[in-house]
Length: 165
Image: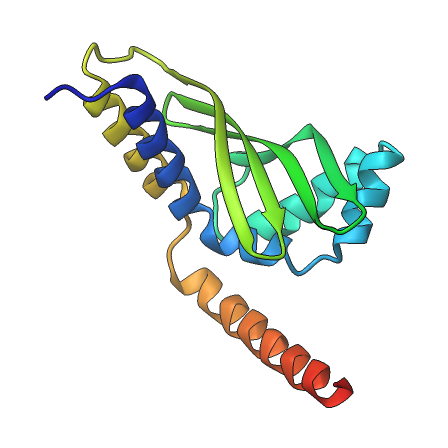
């Protein structure tokens, strides 16, 4: 049975999401209200700085960046949701996507994908995206210490939150 276009899109979104796990975890350390303020006041440079700081330990410079646009969904009785337009560009693969951040975690919504000299085989193009993401990542050694810091900070925040309750 042939795969549909939706199946390829889901696989590609999954590849991006898997590659962004650590970056999304760092971005979720920022208070959502800060994102809301930056979006509402169109202070996209502030968000770009946050994204750059979050990606520099995981990806080669310039391969993953903020697309200078985003949204903040806030309403009475609903959790805050921040949506950041993002760009990935490496080895002739360009992906434009939305990174959705909320209290539950993060998700990716692919909006545009292009391949320099694309294959007529969609599965081959999906693998090319996976390979480009892997090639853009920095070696594990460079971010293990930062990941340990993040985990420690999260554990300390959980202890403090429990003490307040």
